Amino acid sequence: MHRSLNANKYFEFVQSVYADDALTIRREVGIAQYLTDNASALLWINLDDRFTWGRYVLDAAALHVPIITTRCTGHAEDLFPHTTLEHEFQIKEAIELGKRLLSDEAFYKMVAEVPEEKLEQFRSDTLKEKLLSQIC
Image (cartoon, rainbow, N blue to C red; front, side):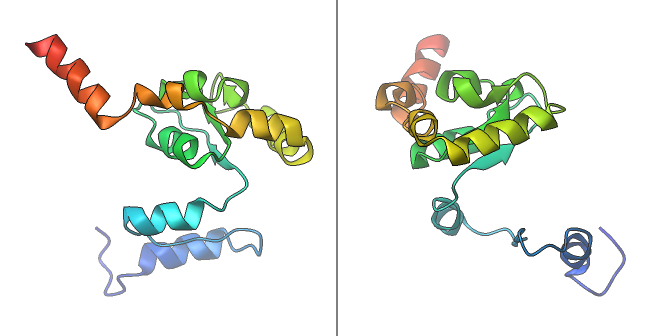
């Protein structure tokens, strides 16, 4: 925690560093507001270098929003094989994918329409059954 009486210190710092009319910086919000705000995005970019569950990948798939991401998110290759990069430093490739998504309607639709059967394995009841089958 920074020793400041200004609770907005870090938020204001980020706003000053990334001040740009094309970029909106928002505060953290609850899940309902997060999904509402981000469902209307044309595409998402998440060049994560952490080996993680990949929550954003699942959210993008559920919302049918294409996401450019990395293999680190585990299931990205299953849900978004055409926009999954090998690593987070492939900035040039991410930009090219973004341009293609925005200019090629057929490609965009193919990437965005994640089949329901691919999402089935990530539903809470499916994951619960899988976990219980492993520990019982």
